[in-house]
Image: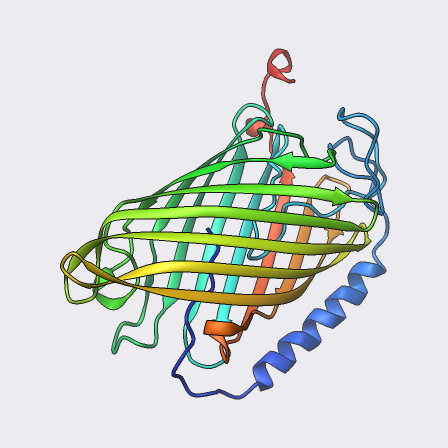
Length: 319
């Protein structure tokens, strides 16, 4: 589950690095818009402009569109047969030195219906003295394409996750216990220029730790929604909203609950290559509202999606 970290009670740092990063982003967008068209692809994607093909079968399109590349909201599109994706996500607080980096690999499991993925993370938590940079917890995910696909008007793909406590709970890098997570992402295409994505999920860690070694069970709930404006097949604007209710261990058997609400505008753009590779960079700006007012962060996103022979099923097994 993609979450926004707490950035409260911290000093504000200079924004000059952010300004430089945004300048690079704008320049990269201009390069993307001027990119030559790639060779035709048989991937099961929407045609340019987001129009929905009449058939769910693979269609020939000149320009693959951008899908499954949101930052904080999960889109309900599994990887297609023979296509794998590597996602880098970096989020840095704009009010303290907290940051988190995650690397996610998504692989189809012999077809579109089943997908396996894993996420590893590194992070820095400024609230813990001498904690330094360390590993975070690890997630192993299974997702089932229940309804639709990337060419459908409505897609639903429930996900189930096993969380491993690979982060050091003593310095705030992990929960300290094995956990389970479930999420229900729903994606809807509204005409040619607008898509919305809807998330609901829950996380259960029966034996979580705090930094003092206290143990308790924690339960978290998350909701999310996003609007994606399909300005073109290679450039999208996003507005993502997340609501999280989470528990923290405060003593043995006792927890406290907190709420976080963020609204995050963002943009993403694509570079498509003749060999089937699609590179999608993106940038977002989560802004805290309500209980998270005053918090803000910068998101940098980068995805590589490409064909891979060993991820392709045998012809007789294809749908």
